[in-house]
Amino acid sequence: MAKKVVATLKSKDAEKYAKVIRAVRSPKTGAYIFKEDIVPESEVKALLKK
Image (cartoon, rainbow, N blue to C red; front, side, top):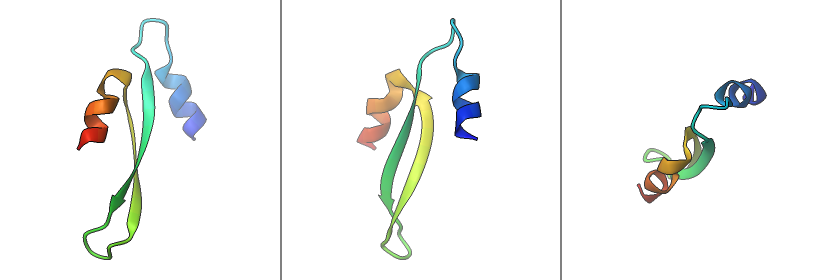
């Protein structure tokens, strides 16, 4: 499935995208969960600062 998503995001005129995987602590259990986002490369640093 991930290959299809990446393949559809690629085109000559399109902006480059990056897949960001973050470890976030769950407020209920305290365990870490992983959040995956596909964002434009220009917004990666802003997303990781949150």
